[in-house]
Amino acid sequence: MSASAQVPPPAPSTLSVPVTVPLAGVQVAANAQVPAEFARLDETRSYLGGLLSVTLTGTVTRAGHVRVTPSADGSALVVSVPIRAAFRAGPGGRGAVLARDFGGEATVRLTVTPTVTPGWDAGVTVTGEAEWTDPLAVDLAPGVRISVQSLVDTQVQAQLNRVAAEVERAVRSGARLHERAQALWARGQQPWALPTPERATATLTGRTLAVTPLRVTPDALKLTLGATFDLDVHLGRAAPLDTPVPLPPLRVGPVTQSGVHLSVPARLAWRDLSRLATTYASARSLPLPVPTHPTLRVLDVDLHPAGERITAAVRVEVRGPLGLTVRATADVSGTPDLDPTGRVLTLRDATVVTRREGLTGRVIGWLADARAQTYLHQAARVELAPLLERARERAQARLPFTPVPGVELSGTVGALRLSALTVTPAALVVVAQASGVLAARVDAGGLVPAAPGPAR
Image 1 (cartoon, rainbow, N blue to C red):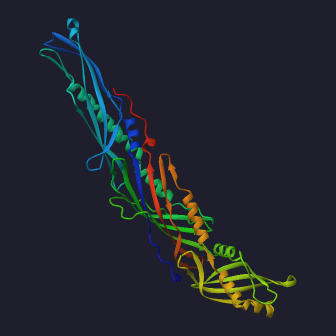
Image 2 (image 1 turned 90 degrees about the horizontal axis):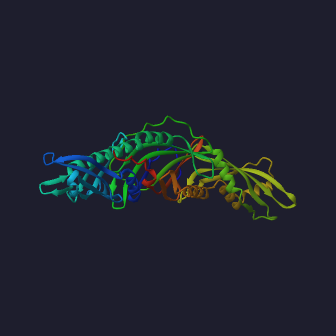
């Protein structure tokens, strides 16, 4: 994989994030929204043509915790809560002896169907119903049947409608999907520092965003977020500020890609690349296989472009017996190439030319030795594996990550490698490839808004 004449357009990066919202947290949120009281009666009615006056009192209250299950087709949540009615019919006057307690049980079901539009409007549609197991009626005397079914049904349905409207309002105002997406989209396109050993900044230019329809399983709400975008990395200098790309429409449908696949063009400034080359080359010295065994050591490496090739000015020091110290410079020129692992930068078809000014014939002869030539050639070699591995480790160390309370991102960062490179006057442009797996877990119980007030 060697340099090409022009910078190739990088392949877009893709991101697929499965999002899981455990139903246990949803149940906590639902318990906070469903009221404790659904209906209350305290009124007097006349029967038998006004001969009998009966006071009706009692309440319809929750009889247990909320249970959340998927709908039959898995597209909605069914929130079920048991309720119990307890009433007393108390005739006045001499009819007081006919007083009776009566009641019944029911299951209230709220069907919550989430919605999202390409215009980034998110909400839910909520419908509610109550199914009574017993009629809310009692016979006080022959021909005197007291029924509060219609009274209770009216109040319970009104309460369900109020809860549905409150949930829909809370989701709309709480989600603010367009507002938040717009803010995140703009912020994501600002330069941001990378967790790399060397100073580096990155910029992101988004292309598309997608979300799958919500799936409800017996234990969780699930959806997948997908995105395609372009990444650009600048090593050793700040990234330029570009005009942000507007937030694209949200595509609601299948997300075909899986995992995280990044294709990142990184600009390695020649100054910073030279510093890396110097770090690795100066770490070892070479005893020359000649009498007196002088030692050759690299002092620094200065890389610069030469058309499609790279020239490395390698400044070395030769130390010999009796305090002999000689410094020399060799120019190593070749075509930049990547080894098959994509983690080592070398110069292919390299030539080594020693600058002779100020050197004796003996030193020139030492530097012309085959082993010295190989050593000088390898001085232009940049071992990127440690750099890439440290970058991977630092990225992995940031996971799991909690961007906001109640949301946790976890995953695995795969190996980083380079897949292409291009020589330009300002920098060596490389394309870094990375892959991994990312997932999000949302604790709905930690995102609960204030519960509604008591029934009226």
